[in-house]
Image (cartoon, rainbow, N blue to C red):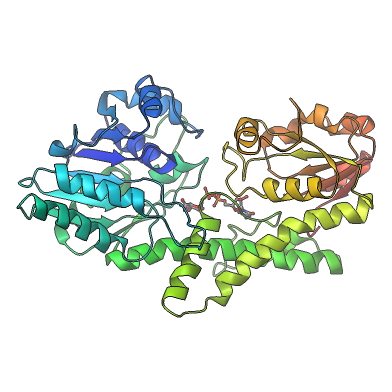
Length: 459
Ligand code: UGA
């Protein structure tokens, strides 16, 4: 295996995108990893080597790292051995924008109840948590230990993740930076040891996740726990704001006849701005940007701080969804009674995740307006059907079937496979050849030559 130093025993609680990816990667690097999930069926599946998330490269790495990996339903089995416990459980939004920390607190309570008070342990918050959670976790553990008549020997650190779904393993192995917020040097040193192969890039890259050419060493940023917590929210809010900014500019680009892709390139080449997250489209979704921007606003409110930039990013994102509907109205004129084909349900490609996906709002609006809606997504259809069983949609097996007899196609997720469709032939199968490209993904010039009434976002 890859790790030359002392191997650590690490317990990871929660096997969602963050927990499982982190566990599999650290096991691959040579640590002893114990993954815990309260769902029996998830643990059973992982024990058999079948991943419970859709993530590029996870299945083969799960197999390769299996000698260092074990899965449990409870924390009890691995806790007495653990050097580090990583909390990677869900932190859902409450309806008022606050964050539900009950799962995090449950884990902290269990740690306080079951840890070996003699053995030093570092408890790491990896879930995205509101400011002050490191301190809350510390208190909860302390209270439980007090009930046992002991003080224990534990440290709490905040170590936010910056993983993109679909590229989570890549981002774990090749991060720009690793942020560790801790008050004690011991916690910092333990996490430095845990991440040593990544910080020094001494591991042999996994088969499907090769090291990018010219990749330098990641920065190791140590901060207070509170700064680390804020870094996570500020990073996501900034990225969301960048997308909303370019989307706002795309509306002006449409009006004046500029091409937003050229504009993005032209501004992104300025190193102070950077070219990432400047793709205009139907806006951001997923489990992170919407939840984290709401949570940041909520924190602002609690401290009496207005956050107009964050609010505006959310508002622009909401409006952007409706831009697709407006474009349909402008081309098709009457939506009631028309057949609209939706290509892509996932909030982005390479994931089956539909959380806060633009498709959800757009489909709902189209149904409310009286359209018949056909849908196709290479992997997210089951998730969509399970979440919206009441919606009267036509689920199809292919892009071709979606296009047949449709009045318009609307591309909402930039799946690679959509590039390989015989668009030149498909145009003849449609009733009306309107194509709204909500991600500016296909070649508009070609599409127009082939006879589509092709409309992009800001181009
Ligand atoms: C995001 C961040 O990128 C990660 O760094 C972070 O760790 C993660 O949230 C998290 O907090 O856990 P993720 O939500 O997986 O990752 O997805 P992104 O790739 O960031 O995309 C988010 C949304 O923005 C998608 O709907 C995507 O289509 C949209 N997007 C992205 C654009 O519309 N334009 C762009 O230029 C880039």
